[in-house]
Image 1 (cartoon, protein in one colour):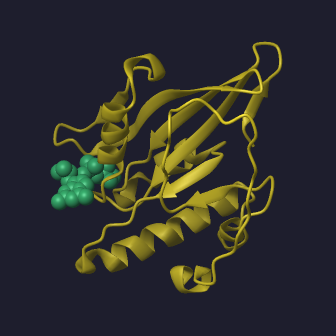
Image 2: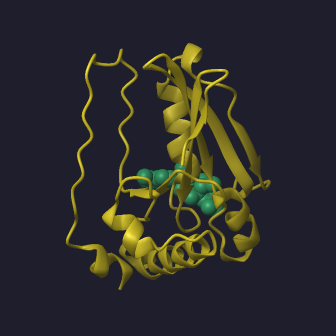
Image 3: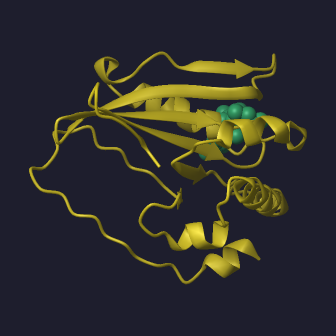
Length: 174
Ligand SMILES: Nc1nc2c(ncn2[C@@H]2O[C@H](COP(=O)(O)OP(=O)(O)OP(=O)(O)O)[C@@H](O)[C@H]2O)c(=O)[nH]1
Ligand SMILES: [Mg+2]
C-alpha cells in the first residue's frame, strides 16, 4: 500500500526493480534519471561494487506532481541480481507497492530469468503476497509491472482506473 501522509499531504509509492544479475535494472534507473527534469528528481544513490554490480541497492526519488492536492512521490529501488545477495533483496523488497521485473532478453539467460522470478515469488510470500494472485492484480494488492511509462505532464482533471487480466501468468511462472 502506498504511504499516505495526511498531515504533509504526501503520497509515497515504493517501486522495486527486480530481475537477474546484469539484466539492466540499474541501467533502467539511470535512464529514468536522465529523462526526468532536475526539478522532479532527487539525488540518485547507487551502492555498487567496483565493477558496477549492485551491492545493496540503487535509489532514485522522483516527484510526479500533485494528485487531488497531494504531492506524489515515487521511490525507485533496484535489488542486487546476483543470486547470493538474497538477504539484501528481501530487505529492499519490504514495503514495496509495485515491482518492475527486468528480464534479460538474451535466450541464454532464460533460466536466470525464471530463477529470479521464482526467487521473487518466494520473497513475496514472506511478505504475505502470492505472486500468482499479484499478477492477476486487484485493488489493494501489489502489482507486478512488465513495463512502465511515466509521463510528467500536468494531470488530467479526471482520471479512471482500469483493471485487466493476462492469460499468460501460468506460463510466466512455469
Ligand atoms: N546491450 C544492452 N546492454 C545492456 C542493456 N541493459 C543493460 N545493459 C548493460 O548490461 C550491463 C549490466 O547492466 P546493469 O544495469 O548494471 O544490470 P543490473 O541488472 O543492475 O545488474 P546487477 O546490479 O548485478 O543486478 C551494463 O554494462 C549495461 O550497460 C540493454 O538493454 N542492452
Ligand atoms: Mg544493478
